[in-house]
Length: 336
Image 1 (cartoon, rainbow, N blue to C red):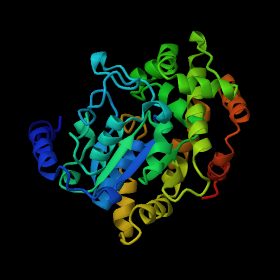
Image 2: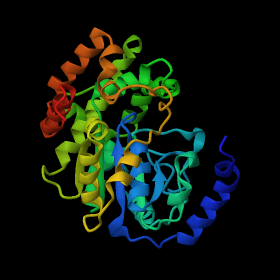
Image 3: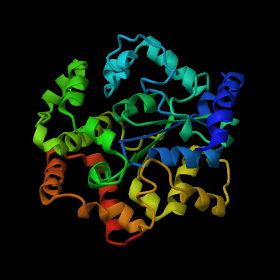
């Protein structure tokens, strides 16, 4: 156990948050988002330290104290820590917009899991907020003029990370593969349901084929946001997870040029942060090659799972993702 984080860190975080409250520049805020198991925590920690931003871990989470908008909202309720995946056309209200603006200037109560926050970044002023379960909020982030980095991992890698023995993601897998999780999300968001129906999309809810729920939801939460965002949107940068892992220097220079175009960064500092693992699966990944981390998922999935992913590519036809998926294929074939 990290005693300084456990004993000193918690009151220190609270004191510093209170002191720095409302001192950040909203125009310097950065959002990192992506699907579960896509490297969002790693990117939050690395970019937070490199760019000197105070990090906020999943401030939409039901356990977070950052947001205090109407608890009848279809997304968050404190009772039982129930959450569903928010759709920006459903959730945006005056209360939500006000809470989001408060986050961007650092006037929030930090994140709900303090172990993911570095003591060093506690003393920085400007904000970097990391989200999962929020892909369907990306159009709202972008239209709010917030610089947004969307990290996208191959769905096979996401599924493998959830089901691989020893990955420490068993609880997450149980939740994500449950049909009740998606049913609750859809039942509470009629606009999302109507849009899915208009597009001819729906979920399987098949208990013995739970992986289909995860893959369908993966594609839906990449498909719908791209329908709302301009192709050359200046406030959004899409980064393949695989490229960040296999070509970290080029990838981080690209991201840093996006977040802080007027600053320069040392190569050795970038590589130091890029090679630092994070998240619950870091122990399971020790000793694995970078290429295996990105593309070893083929060894973990059944042929049926692999075929289903391919069928979803054809069903959802995410044209805006073509260049990302093409780049992932290049990397898989060794073209860094």
